[in-house]
Length: 466
Image 1 (cartoon, rainbow, N blue to C red):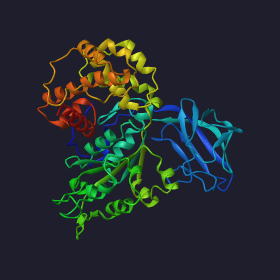
Image 2 (cartoon, rainbow, N blue to C red):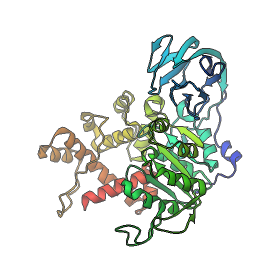
Image 3 (cartoon, rainbow, N blue to C red):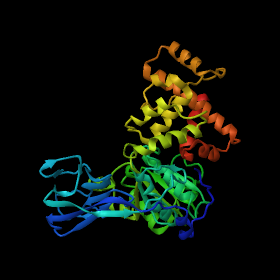
Image 4 (spheres, helix red, strand yellow):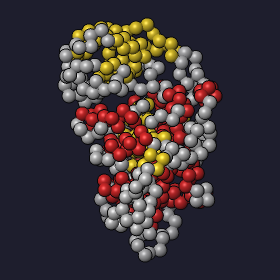
């Protein structure tokens, strides 16, 4: 399921030919008419072919734009689900109601339901079924998913990989935003160039500017040598700005200039340096809400969101749970088929932590075998069972030995659980690195996770054993 990183994407027709199409299938289709309010007469058609939910609101990214001052920038999301249309209130200021009943999420049949948003009223009617051709693939690069929610994204992903425009990837934590960005890079004409990630939540605010744009020697206290920023490190490749919604508002104009002018000036420097970088941004936040709250600049948003893709949460792509679980089971070295009873438990979980949580659940099962049933599937484990500083590493332990050793420590349940699970994490990192002669990139690919996440995992384990 992994694509070679050096693949070029300069021939769009060749790329699109690789996405096999299933015969067109009939899907429900709906028409949304604006019958009251400033935008009376507006019309939107929605069927199952759209790669993302159709948004309604005042933001330029909304497919149905409304000028009603009582309507939020992103007020409502519309999505075809089976034979119905799902309406989701996106945390709007004034709420939404259908036939006079306020809702957060509701399914409608398209029988003339009236939806009120502020002073605007929308009427939803069912249209003739649409014939929609869906790709038959189960992955894009290292992004895995065969549900209709994911398959309808793949043609858009192919086009985005062949393009060089800035892109915003939206989605909840753990939905695979960074892995998608890396897969887009690997399928692009920039695949031979660097893929660099900057996490806005991982760097102190006072160091962000020098981290992104670099600095000259003596630019600030502690700057004992000149340093190339991440824009220069990504020259000829792709820079992913992760959690861009958390970027300090004072630094946003400088990022905007770097993207618009394709040049940066290191902190303390006097000259501008040209850079050739494709910028992608990822966020778990609703950037339109951040703009409304004054925490994000609208001009930066418009510059970044030349293209936009929204990754669905795992709870909305339940057909992918078994596929992903088997994928992780194989990648993590599981012997034989995935146990049926374990798969049933996975299918019945809501996955608030999304794909990352599912990956950890499979890793925990491989570490503990049948003992894993005593642990909560939703528990994220991140603390290592490491020796005390200066002591010799413990001899290899079986899962039963690990359990016995942890129980003897007399720690609380949550802490004990973390120690047991992370003993597997530590051994797995070392094992996969050994199999690939220390090559972290190949090890990450074999592990089925993004390079940066693998590097963080590796650094964390190294820090705990040092």
